[in-house]
Each structure stands twice: as C-alpha cells, then as structure tokens.
Image 1 (cartoon, rainbow, N blue to C red):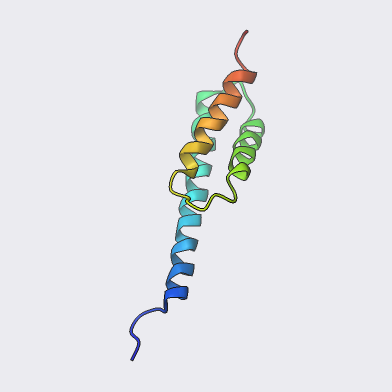
Image 2 (cartoon, rainbow, N blue to C red):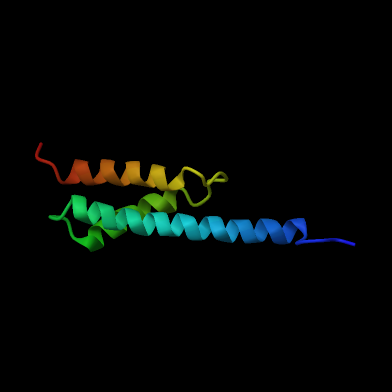
Length: 84
C-alpha cells in the first residue's frame, strides 16, 4: 500500500509552493524599491522588476531568483536615475 502523495504529485505541490513564495518575494521587492526610490513611479519599478524576473524564467534552480531579480532591478534603476 502506498502512503502519502506519489513523487510526481509531491513535486508538483512543492513547485507550486516555491512559485507562490517567489511571486510573493517579487511583490515585496516592488514595494521595497518603491519606498527606496519614491521619485520613480511604481509602474516603472514594476516593469523593471517584471523584466528582470522574466529573464530568469527558465532557470532550473529557483532558490536565488528573487535575490538575482533584486540585484538586476537595482542596477537598472541606479543606472537610469542617478546623475552622471
């Protein structure tokens, strides 16, 4: 008798949880960046973060995706919105 979910079901559930965690982290990142850069519209910040997140859509290991998105978004925002 098999107890608990089958391996494929278990993987599917954990992937969904990871995706929810990742999406939550990305949403919180937009909020933090909006506070840090009040002179930049929330829409622009959201676009920058979404674009950075899309670049990592195919990454097989998702653990550090939110951190990498944050670094990319910060680089982009600093480069476009600081005096040169």
